Amino acid sequence: MNAHDKVNILMVDDQPAKLLSYEAILGELGENLIKALSGREALEVLLKTDVAVVLMDVSMPEMDGFEIAEIIRQHPRFQKTAIIFISAVHLTELDRLKGYQRGAVDYISVPVVPEVLRAKVTLFAELHRKRRQLEALNRDLEARVLERTEKLQESETQFRTLANSIPQLAWIANSGGDAFWFNQRWYDYTGTTLEDVGGAGWHKLHHPDHLARVIKGLEHSWQTGEPWEDTFPLRGHDGEYRWFLSRTVPLFDSHGNITRWFGTCTDISRQMAAEEALRKNERLAAMGRVAGIIAHEINNPLEAITNAFYLLESHPSLDKDARSLARMASEELARISHITRQSLSFYRESQQAVPVSVATVLDDVLELQARHFRISGVELDKAYKSNQLILAYPAELKQVFLNLVGNALQAMPAGGRLRVTVRETAERGRVPRGIRVSVCDTGSGIRPEDAKRLFEPFFTTKSTKGTGLGLWISKGIVQKYDGTIKFRSLKLSTGSSTCFSVFIPGTVSAHPSDASALTGVM
Image (cartoon, rainbow, N blue to C red; front, side, top):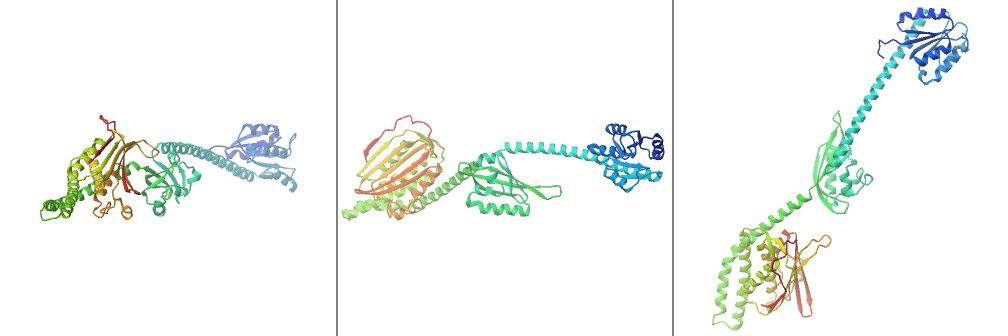
């Protein structure tokens, strides 16, 4: 209904003459005038028609106006229909009170003043028209709200579907930073519920070493409205931590106020591992450059000193003890010179990872040591229990075992036993499958104070003569393969025993030739 639509006015009186007079008075209003000669007829009209005003006589047969008004008001449709009583008989205050109690909005006595009647009917007719317009607007608004709500629900469903399908962990927080929604990926990774991590409960999933920094960065964003980004480890449902790149952006309303924060956490553990591997390689390369410089700088003077001791060994003026000391010094210098030359050539070579037999590399190392050093009385016990190949750089493995075997031989100047074993290890828990090499000697052992700083650069290992450079290089090479190098030193009743154990994960295939256990004397 709009402002120009006509409204219906119901006139109820058992006297047709009165109805005609009301029609004459109200005709100029331009509204629809409907006449009823009884209460029953009036009720039938009301059930079929939307009536704005009921103009009704009080005194009528069958049902008087009060009874009709009471029936009208009991119907939900007519709770707000305006009823105006007209009476020439019931004019007492008690009659008026009774009319108002029955739901009348006005009570007019006869004779009727035309202007007053028109004014009252016009007022209530206009109120009805406005009410109907308002109801129409409300219905339209409700329809629009319903449509928008459905669209929002559809958008939210689409958003949740999208957020649950992305590989990132996603979350939403209110303007103050309290999280109230997480996607399914978050719950799958963390094994938590909204009750566990809602609000600020997600703090418990952060590694304690990084939590203070993360909270500080987020609080800065909450206060300034600036996006936030950081990397940190998050604990998964298995208790393990993985590295994530987290980003948070504010969401604004139409007035530019922050209403929510949307954040994602992207798993970058593989990238971090790759970067760490690259850093290891860079450290190894730097260590190689250091070793190359050392080899270059000391090889020339070592050659001169070695030659001098070689001449002293056969000098006729020296006694037997002096010549023996000269020979030992010459051998030590030769060993150091050999290690530095190996370091220099190793880091100058262009290398490519290939399937390597650890047993073959060890045999080459043992042969090389036997050829270059005049060491007697050392019993060699070899036990090769695996013929598997590993993907590696041969020169690197050779460098590792040269250092370990060389240190073992140096610790046994008066002879002893050198045991070298190779065996394949199966996957156990978090330890992968791989090859384990042990180099054990019965030499002088490792001093406790040296053991505390094992593998630190330039420390004394077997005796006061060593520098620790060889083991330092060996550790860097083994770590490059994600392997480990460990040692143990025991005091036995017959002397000392020192064992170095090298583990390198991964196997390729069986070696074409069998490697069997050998025992020999160097």
